[in-house]
Length: 294
Image 1 (cartoon, helix red, strand yellow):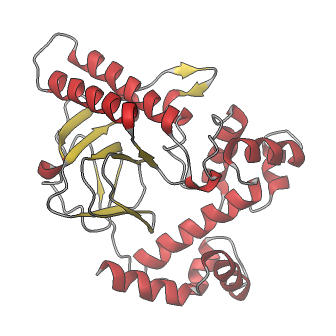
Image 2 (spheres, rainbow, N blue to C red):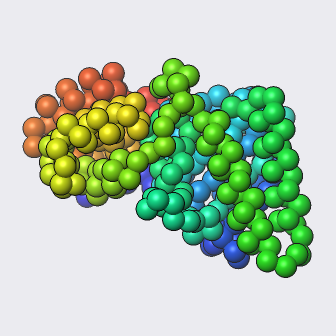
């Protein structure tokens, strides 16, 4: 029987003891319920604000340096770990999807932010000048309200959180766009990514996804490329590689079994596919990632 390396998944209400779907704490006081230096995931959103530089934050097997005056965004089910230097302080904001939700032009509010539910770009925002002061002021208001006993506290916190997210969205510049601001994701791109999440182990071609969405493959590619800077095909491949890396890390399945789980009948083709996108063989990736995390 195949053994799994269990990556813990933590619950906002059970693990953090949240009573309203939102938790706020200082970074240096956070993660008492579990060890954040080991790979883990959770079923809620998380924002980390760092006051100083030092250490690294790994999100879905990509390492990002902990830099002063930066925001890091974590989405539900992303595998991550934080190894910060002891002198690094900051804040952690944890919240459920329902805590901050609106309908905007038919797009779920939380999904309109490019740093959430988007494993294709870095979920980091650097703060400088006025932006640093604006974010610091918002966090101070959230902290004050969180520890108050004011009426309608959850509504006030939700409003402050919304302003913080929108402010961060205006500042967000994904690393892959070389400094060019990224346009908001369209409804079509959102639907494509939802379809991809449900079908990536079975459906591999842009044509099949365009058929699902009742549009031409050219229109899908043009829209997705405009919204993300990547073609639909690139996003499909990146999602498959991410899942392959997760399986290689957490399971004892053979490469052949992983290939089959991801919809590849020919293991040798899967190995070539993985190597061309991950620049490593599946076996070497498994060996190196486990040495790194253990």
